[in-house]
Length: 43
Image (spheres, rainbow, N blue to C red):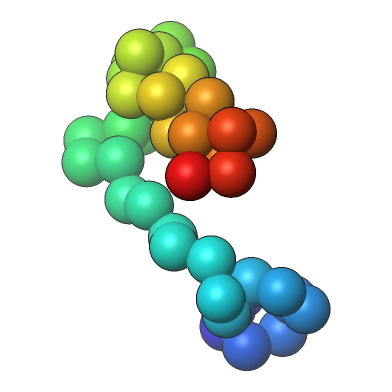
């Protein structure tokens, strides 16, 4: 639904961080940081 409704979202890779839980930054901080860094770098 997100990819369909948000302009520009369909062309982006959507990452799923397995076992992330509600507090993603606490549960999977390094993995989340890598995804965000890649997004900012334009990877």
